Image (cartoon, rainbow, N blue to C red; front, side, top):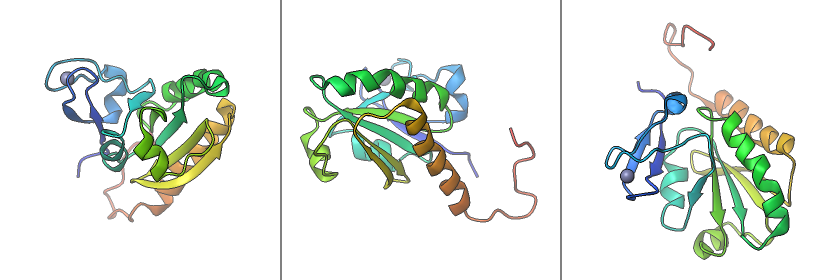
Length: 165
Ligand code: ZN
């Protein structure tokens, strides 16, 4: 069986790519136009790309719901970027401009920003309302990863990875 994949739309041409997150450091590129698909920066999502990205990613996805005019959002952005860098290959970090994505914001009942939601296999597993420091964001992701590992189907003997990485 293949390892986990994440699903990303190219920011330049809109082509959907299935990307092996283990190759985050190698700088994956769009299979259609060659534009880099950086996994170590927050990925900009909108109403058109949110569901497919979140549902189609095997790794937990942390989404920062923000707006350009929101001071606390701007203050928190560097922490979100730092988490994206720290978790590249283990989780996907994305951001969604709530002004430009009203459908998605309504679907998740976003009433205050910033709001951070962590998704695992398309399901919301954690939510933080209000600005939070990097350590809190990392804890949300770490908890999601721990839970995902616990929920993973038991592997057949001998099928476990030989290296703990
Ligand atoms: Zn492209």
